[in-house]
Length: 269
Image 1 (tube, rainbow, N blue to C red):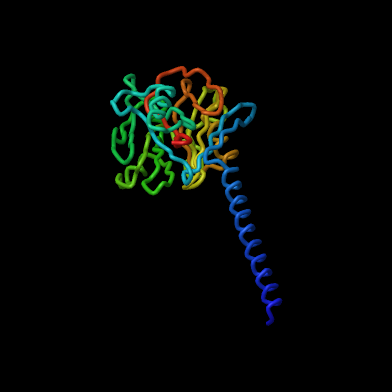
Image 2 (cartoon, rainbow, N blue to C red):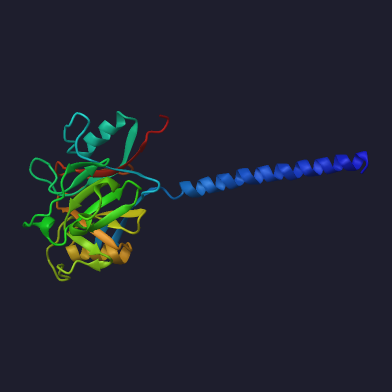
């Protein structure tokens, strides 16, 4: 190979390497854009059988999900705004939040509460009256491995508590293994604003709140048929609320006990 041929070959190889580098950069940009285009928390409003329902889709693989009750000074948060303000002190922003289950007059949880693997309130297996005790009631939890669990209280009682990072107990179960709670009446006229959590799979959750009154059966049907949930747990009704960092808020009607939510680091911190 003569000198001219070597120069031509060198230019040819350099051009190929340059194009490969450009292609790699473009591919990374496309991949990053694709990831950014599917946020870890997606919020939308859906009309189901003439009832408006707000749906929050959360991917646990991409989200910092937490349960809140008391601040570091052991004061009850009670309100979304108090929680948001406290998180801001720690360079965290509140992406969305919702009341996370039933509570007593002093805002103590009626059932189990686990925060960061620490048991704050025990599993409640008593009999009683009211929605919490409609059977089966159940537990919504996130394991130490970051997987979603929604199951009847009797099943959850068999789990090793050390495997649980977050847990809140409520009732009744709306769906179990894809089946609507048999206690629900499709013709029921008992309709209230209600919120719930549903499990699509071990990574994906949906949190829902009706913007208009809905029955237990209607809410369960929505979670099953519209959102493809296999398991779902009722959280509360009438006073239920939703905080969405990207939209104007409806007035919070009640001080809450436990609050669930997704947080993220504040930009530039």
